[in-house]
Length: 283
Image (tube, rainbow, N blue to C red):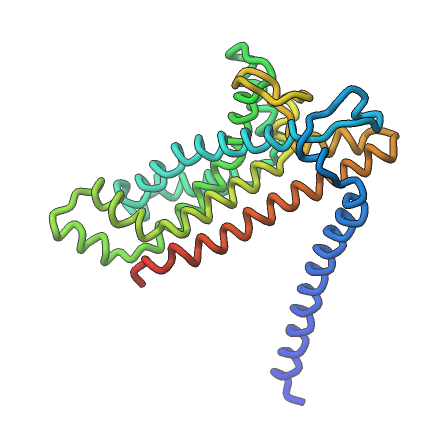
């Protein structure tokens, strides 16, 4: 047999094996969550807050954690958009392409992307101490924003860089300013990718526990203020799994199943949004 053919078959086998390992891991995780969590799943889990003795196996649900995670992820995502989008537009429209400053900013985003989430939680906790804040929804939003900001910014940056430079030059030739070009040309062309970046960051933020363990606190009630503690699904899973009661541990897997469904919905939304908005993109 030809040497090239042998090498091709070897690498093909490696790729198939790697894909099988990844898919097997995904199937095992989902199967574990479904098998252990489905028996504890009921209407009360998603419609009630924890009652007295909930962590001892008595009545109640995790509505507080579902609502709290939604508040936290939405707030952090909106704050990150307000910071990420202007930065990305500046790097690609106003700053000189290929300059050392632009390269440094992108390198900084790459470094920040790799920082463990617990570090963002500790840094957010330091900021809270400096300003005299207690564990609260606001503190959690700050910590999660720091976590997803480099993810969102870097993803947006890569998408905006794919906008054909000819479109920018045509816009300038027609008399449009850089701001008009950024808002009416670049954002419109990169909008599918921007939506994808936002939803990916949202999914990352809603599923993180380490960044909020010091900043958001935990409560059995639904927060009505930015300065009140807030429960999250990841922490609810952590605390329920830490109890010695089998009934509560089953509820932890049910909570994990709910969180997985939320992430699945976000992932499907990413695909649908990408296909819908790509129709208006000039290729």
